Structures are given as C-alpha cells and as structure tokens.
Image 1 (tube, one colour):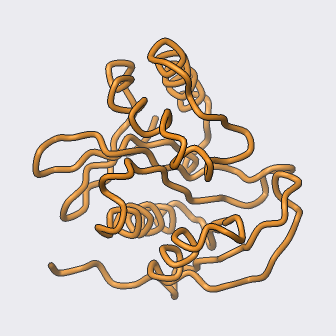
Image 2 (cartoon, helix red, strand yellow; image 1 turned 45 degrees about the vertical axis):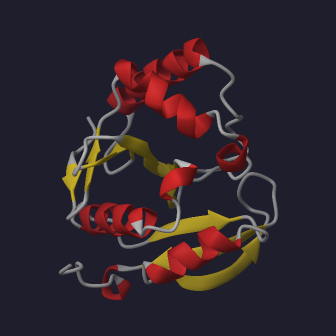
Length: 181
C-alpha cells in the first residue's frame, strides 16, 4: 500500500479510480506524455485513464515498499495536479527511479522538486541507499528539476528502456533540508 506523504504544499496519496478525469488532463496532454517512460503512452480517453488507474491500484497492492505510485494533490485547493513514482528500473529492477508527471499549468512552481524530495526522504527511511532519475537528453526542464533536488549527474547510459538517457543519483547525504517556506 502506498504511504501517504505530506509536504508544505502537497499531499502525495494513493490513486483512486475517481481521479481519472483530473489524471487525464495530465496523462492525456501531448506536452506531458512526450516525456513519459517508454513503457507508457499518452492516454487517449477517460475510459482508458480509468483502466490505467485500476491497473496502478492493483500493481500497488503487489509492490514491495518503497516502490509506489502517488497521486499528487495540491493542499491549498485539493486539486489533483499529477502523479509521482518510485519504481524499479528495467531491465532487472535493481535500481529505483523517482519520477513525476504534472499538469502543464503547474510547471515552474517547484512542485516536482517538492514531491521528489518528499519521496526521497521517505525512501531513505525504508533502507534505500540511493535513488535515480533518468532523463531524456532533450528534457532540459527535468534535468534542471533533478539537480534542484540535490541529485548528482552520473552519466549517460542505454541500460534503461533501451534509450540513451541521462542518469542522476541521490543518496541520503545529498538530500537537501526541507524547505521552511
């Protein structure tokens, strides 16, 4: 079961099927989906989004913590603004990848950094000694975001997803202190 995480501005919580409408605004947006994992395509309609969320909920029940998927909800107005993950990276699942997908309207407000830091802090309490982010070389926004979380550049590889990706790593000593804003 996904652990609920709370930050100053966000609630990271388990997905619910009734999140489908708001989730479709994120995962159905071509500007968001172009950066999704190669294992996931743009979601085409509400029925497909519901099925995908049902799959995520079932998958979550089988995952071994700290692997999880979260719906990202803004605390001030309760709006679902996206999703975040901490999942084993293919092909062997030895490494954990942190990732996020947010509604385009909230890009540039620090929510991805805030969610990533919350996930990392929690993961490090679960006997995880490092997490990774993999970024397509042309996704400069994501690369900047992971750097803001304190992640360090590791290099490029085609080990994951059979794509050339930039790899960033975060260890407990690298985590930035919680914001006091």
